[in-house]
Image (tube, rainbow, N blue to C red):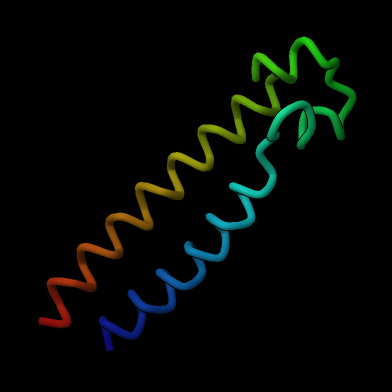
Length: 76
């Protein structure tokens, strides 16, 4: 029962992580340009939207790593 809940959380977090990574800007583009960021600030990644996107992505990656370790331990 607990393993099934962790698997569901893991799948949701993995899909969310893929979506968040796709929102990041590549070489001049991405989420900051979508909301009116200029080219100079988008390249530096210094907009508020980009910083918040970075923080959310890192937090999601930490949860993904945690659920991966927990699943590896539980499925042995």
